Image (cartoon, rainbow, N blue to C red; front, side, top):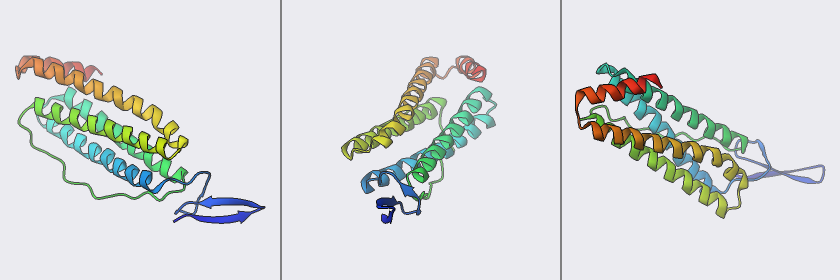
Length: 184
């Protein structure tokens, strides 16, 4: 609920948190932002679960890679939460589901992860479009570097998936990929 106060003949908008805001956020954009924040948090928990799966199998390169991804998704969630606060909004956290913890193959894990990344990219692009339609240039400026980084992450998962598919479940080939990931 937006409040306004009159201060020295100037109208000041207040967000739901009571913080002054230069430009109120569109309610539809804000709702979609909350959904995206939940997606980032789900990715964080899911990647941590995948990290543990690889750790249990002594595939330390894959484990390290997914721990980094988990931490990166949490950093994204922080950025979004801080952006909400800077825009005078209240951060609304939704329930998360239990992550998948059993997998049939490394290829299944990487395929799932690639699909999760493409969903995150699509969500960011939808946020960008909604911000454009509502003339919220602050949001577009905020999202530009995030979309660029997300697209790179999606590309990296596509690259790893290609390697894993090419390895064709051969343990020695998968160990080489694991070793390469350990060096990163």
